[in-house]
Image (cartoon, rainbow, N blue to C red; front, side, top):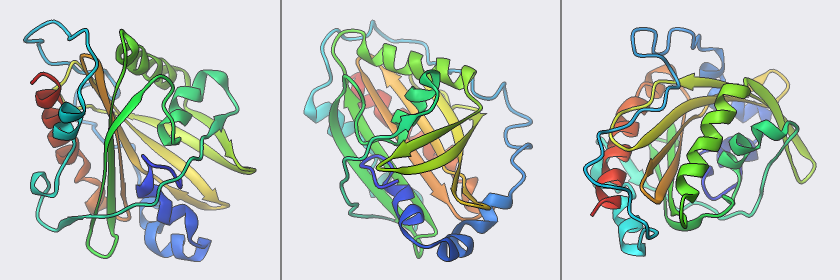
Length: 243
């Protein structure tokens, strides 16, 4: 995905199938059925007890900047990475799945974008991308509601952009606590016949603000980092959105 939010997928989709086999093959073969097996029901929206009513006004630029992750927030080894901007938007073959296709698209309908950050660890072994945004009125709640509805309706669909088509599987994951609404899930993107990458995604909402995050790892051990990163991102975002 060569999009602003999904720069973490950019390298995987831009390189050859041979490179993908070397970099992401381990993740493609991982048995994910045990993920979250001893946790609460996967995919359920989680929420923190609100300390005040959701603000009526959109988040300010300062709030959105403060809500985004920084290197100092991440475990040792992560560093900031400058990603390439892109305007690609993905069209789903199923209307009910379009909110999920929007997760890897450059644009989010109705959103005003704020901070957008990218990080990498090791020799691009894992990549992390986050984008903070805000909406007018009930736009943020509508945004997360559409994603939640799509997660219930879609387990697989196809996306297309600029003539490129890909099959995409969806698996709900357990979301962290910390904000009014949080959703976590995994995509399985068939980027080439027999080659699948499995990024994990997170969406959070607090008041009129929201963020989306993508974590792409090339090994099962690195994939486990997602839970900690998701918790950190959610808590920082919620705190800034309420400040």
